[in-house]
Image 1: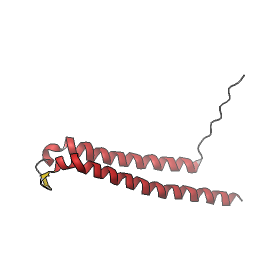
Image 2: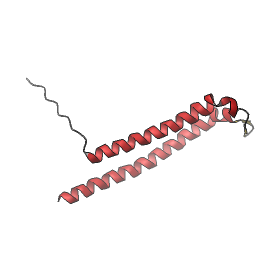
Image 3: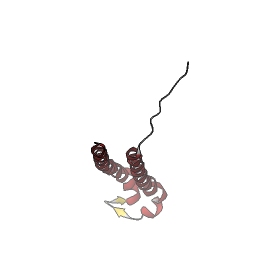
Image 4: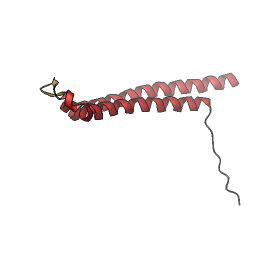
Length: 100
């Protein structure tokens, strides 16, 4: 008995969608890593000499700044993905209309 597995390949619109999605995720993760790890650990020495709200900037980034940036990145991701979803749905509708 043969075990046939049906694999569905992505069409052009789906490939464009996923490439844009992965690019957005990569950019946002890079920003998060730079702020969280860079601002709180790698650049802690130079940033510790910068006063910010009564504490050093490196301490503030480690304790609150990275969390605020993370929340902001979630908001940016949600907004950008909403736009990307609408763009993808519009391209599908246009493709279907051109075939009719």
